[in-house]
Each structure stands twice: as C-alpha cells, then as structure tokens.
Length: 268
Ligand code: 0L1
Ligand code: MG
Image (tube, rainbow, N blue to C red; front, side):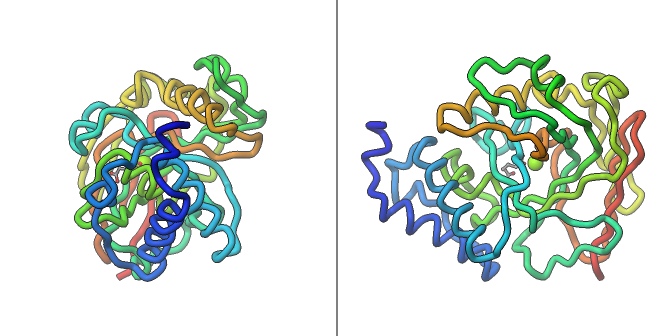
C-alpha cells in the first residue's frame, strides 16, 4: 500500500492512457520506468487495471479471461526479469483460425504456442494448488498467443511489461476440447512450425513444470488484488517455446501430442 501511495493516481492514469493510445494508433513508446523509477510491480498492476477499463469502455468489449507471461526461466532471462506476469484477455482479442490474420493494426507482433485452460468453476486464492486448477478446469485446448509489446523493440522492465497488459494482443484457441486427464500436461510434446519448417520443440512441463502450476501461481497472486479466475474464463498457460516474429504471408502451426494441431495464416 505504501509503495502504491508513492505514485499519483493521475500519473497512473496517464501511463494507462499512453499505452492505450500506442496500441490504438499502432506506435511504440519508451519504457516508463526511465521516467518514473518509483514504478513498482504493484503500481504496474494498477495501471494494467486502468488500461483494461479504458479498452473495455472504448472498444466496447469485455473480459474473456487471463494470460500468463514469462513463465519459463529461459524467457525470463531473455527479457531480464525475475518472475512471471499475468495479463487480461478481452473478447475482441480472440482470433478465428479459419480466417487469415491481418497485421495492419499490430506494431511488431510475435506468436507463441500456449495451452488454453477453460474454467467451469471459480478459482480463488490464496492456497490454490495444481490439483485445484485441474478440478476447476472444464477442458484444455491447443492455443497460440500473439504478443505485441507497445514498447520500442520489446525493451521493458518487469513493471513496464505488466502495465502493458503483459504484451497481450490476440489469441487463438483450437476448437477441439480435451479433458485434463485425456492429455499428459507434463510430458506432452509440442512442435511449433513456421511455413512448414520446425522452429521449436518443447513439452507441456516447460511451463513451470506443469502449466497448471503457473495458473495456481496466478490465482494466488490475483487474490491479493481482490481478483480471481471466474467460471467461463479462458486462461493461457504461458508460452511453451520462444516466440516467432510474424510477417505477411507466414503460416504457423502448433502440434501437441494427442491434440489436434492448430494453424494460422497471416494475410499477404
Ligand atoms: O506471453 C508472454 O510470455 C509475453 C509476456 C510479455 C513478454 C514479452 O513481450 O515477450
Ligand atoms: Mg504468451
């Protein structure tokens, strides 16, 4: 609480609005920590909440779920941060894989394989475990996330990226649904291809040993802010591999053992 009081509400509103405009008008901004060194992880989640309010109001959309980011040590090291993050998914971020994706409204998009968990029950911290996550899950499905940091060259600190809704941009969820006991959420292999060339392989367990562990971590964080995972929410687990830069005409496919593969095509 004390930490949060160090930044004026006006400043938090201004940062949220600057991030909203950068996304709306498709341009990059420089990280805010340089201008506001007092920005903390907690104040950054306050800004994220304000950004989501702005987007819901101006884009006439609503919250459809949550996403985890930076769940692998490799990605944390790559980005120079020390813990995972979460962000909010909105209904208008959902992409239908049947149609080519336009990059026109995106700044410098990258795409990454994820596992989507869809919830049939609320999941409320602070003592959520992997078992609780699995019990509350209606189904899992293959997914991809398009991330599009609003920061120049994807350069940010942990508070910056949290304020920017953890780089959320779009998400794609496969139409086939799988019960949690139908797939091996630790050892299930994943192959990620770009234009039919394999660019990365991984296993489900690359997300904190078990993707449900990442979700439990988030549920236990959310409660400190009076928030929780709601029945009906879609939650993206965090990426299983590094992300790939998207170009016009590219195609991307993620194939998980035991699940139908999911492909997207980028508009030419
Ligand atoms: O979903 C992710 O892992 C991305 C979180 C933000 C970091 C980035 O923009 O790469
Ligand atoms: Mg992601």
